[in-house]
Every structure is written in C-alpha cells, then in structure tokens.
Length: 324
Image (cartoon, rainbow, N blue to C red; front, side):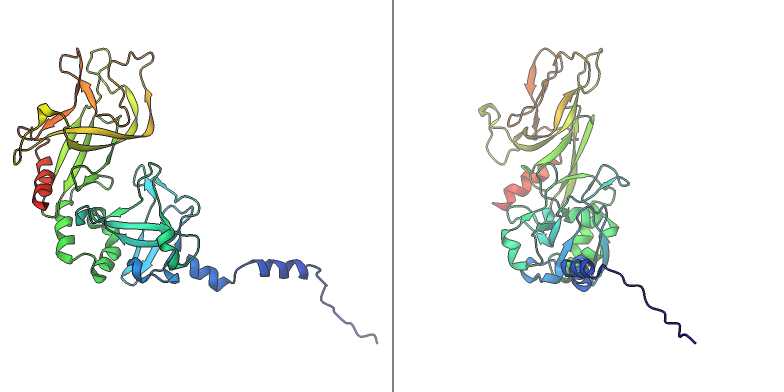
C-alpha cells in the first residue's frame, strides 16, 4: 500500500514577511506610545510613559490614576469637534504664566517628536489656527464635569486647591461650554464679527462678572440694519493713549479696543457695499459710526460712568491696581 503523505503547501513570502516585522516597532512598544496613560502634569516630573499621540483624533481619552477624561482640539459646536492636527504628539502639562492671574492657567500640549522628556524645553506648544496656544483653561476645567479626573489630578499635584476649584465652579455654573473668558484687562480675546452680541466673561481670583460688546460694526441704516462683514478678529482692551482721556488714579480710566490680528479674513456681505462702516485694521483702535452716522469715532468705554453692561471691567482695573 502506498502511504498518503500530506504536505503543507509552501508559501514563498517568508522574506517579505520578515522584512515587514523588522520595519514595524514591537507591539508592546507601539502600545506604550499610544496608550495615552499619563502619570503627571508636572513638566519637571515627566517620563517617557507620559508621551501621548492624539494626531487626527476628534475626542481622545486621556487616562490618569484619578480617572479618564476626553479632550478635543476645537469645536464649532458640542457635536462638531475638529480632529487634532497631524503630528500632534508630546506631553500634556500644567502651564501658568506668572504675569497673569492664577485663573488664567491651564493644560497645554508641548509638541516633541519622540517620548523623551529632555526634549520638552526645545519643543513648542500646540496652537489653534489663530496662532494662540491650545489650552484647557482652569475656568473651563472648573465648569465642565467631563474634566473631573483632571481637576482631581491637579489638586493631587497641588497645582490648585479644592477651595479655588469650588469658587470657580460657582462663578461659572451658568456659562456655556464655548464662553469667552478674560482674567486681565489687556488679555487678547476673539470677536466674531457676525454676532450682534459678544459676551466676555470676566474672572478674577476673587470676583467674576461680564461685559457686553453689542453691535460694534452694525450698519444702522434702514437699508442695511445688519453687520455687513463676516470674519473673526483678535482684540484686547487697554487704557486710552489719548491725553484728553488721561486722569489720575484712583479714578477709573477710559478703555479702548485694539485690533491685534485678523484671524479669519473679513468679507463683505451686501453686494456693492459702500463701506459705510469701516473695516477693522490690524494694529489700529476699533472705530464705529457715531449715533448720527455722519462720522466715525473711536470706540471707548468710560469706566467712571460706564453703563451696567460694562461696569464689571472695573474688576480687572481694580485687581491690576491692587497688584502694585
């Protein structure tokens, strides 16, 4: 009888297979770099295991010993989150500019190419499209329940205390997820030109308030009755530089609004618009039409006799005076 011998078919891709394995990092190593489990937010204590890669992700989860939290790059609405840009990898860390109040501190992402903490000092922070640093500000951490684990981590590492967090939670309880906050008078913030009302929330270490910027560029003529432009600009409040507005302390100053940068190009909405309302210019002070519409005038807020919608700006003026 003939013995039936079954042979395993010969597959001729051993060389190709071995090449692929050689060129691919070991699974454990890749998982280590993409696990997004971090031990600290203190940049001085970072290790290679704190390295995270969130490239192209819309809402990656970050795991800490206090729990997990989802972060996002930016969003036009709660449901419409934009993914992180390519090559968004590095170290999440706690950042506080000593020149700004503690309430302006927050979480940033220092971009470095490899999981090496020694590269931290030569890396750069992740930026938004407007060139401002990406950040989860302390105020947003306080008023958003999804960041509970990060708040607990910050308290555990003694960057903030429970009393400060609770104070901010009370002061920001009714703020929207995308509210604009300022903590210092000359702190830059964005304005959406298409909005008839921009609400700027004021947060200081001890007090909070808000100011309303209404119809800054609205064309009041009956034939238009709207804002004739689209776009976004970066602005800041500052004391008026003009001698006629000068007054000695402690009298409140006259405040103006400076255009720092055009973030999204300004476009005209009405066809063949006659430019009755002036277009904001980078570096210049904002102007608006006078009530009678015959001329342009500087946009000013006299804090000594400010209307209710602007009175809370005095919080930042008084805080600045107390700091000296």
